[in-house]
Length: 274
Picture 1 (cartoon, helix red, strand yellow):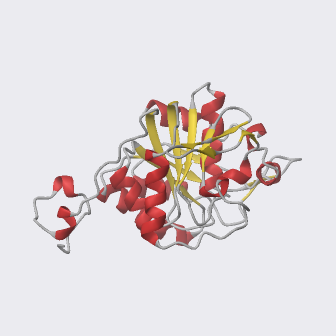
Picture 2 (picture 1 turned 135 degrees about the vertical axis):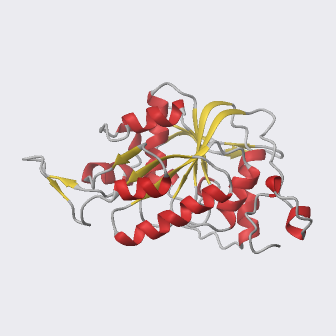
């Protein structure tokens, strides 16, 4: 493998082992269709990536779009905690069937298949990456306008597998205001560029706290750095998410679909028309 390898064999003429063993695009389950695939990523953990993924799915469903969520964060799945399910995930000899939330969002996650939600998933990278591909190939997703993929943080096996194996139309990068995050945002941006994946937008989570009485904004982690991060990501589609106790409580109670707030309304409109 060349030191200048971009891991995108489609644009490379080198005859190396990586090219010979290149991961091919996986075929979607034959009973399924997905018009748009959007991955939600972060350069590090703890910035609210899964929250943003859940909010995006909820808003898409409110727009009457047929919506699905593939939880690719296999060892740290938090998507199922955010929703109440009207129908559980199921499986037969050949096919997996996603769970269905109260408003009709289809969800597949390892945590929906475990006997106990607190059981740890102690798997090595290739097994985890294979599981994510199976969620694409073996799940009967039905007909969908948009699928959001909740990615694990960082730039490791699973993001690489998703970008190489699934037809990702673009990514949303989630960050927070701390200065350190500027560096990890750059890592996510660089990986997206190397894999030729468009950056559709940038969300700064935990950006501020709004006083319920005077509506003054307080910046516990310092002033917003969204402009700086957006310049790195080369996008003008941005959104700020506040620290909001009601939003946190909704997630803890599995009632995210009932959240109130317009923080991402314009953002998702730009994402879906891209």
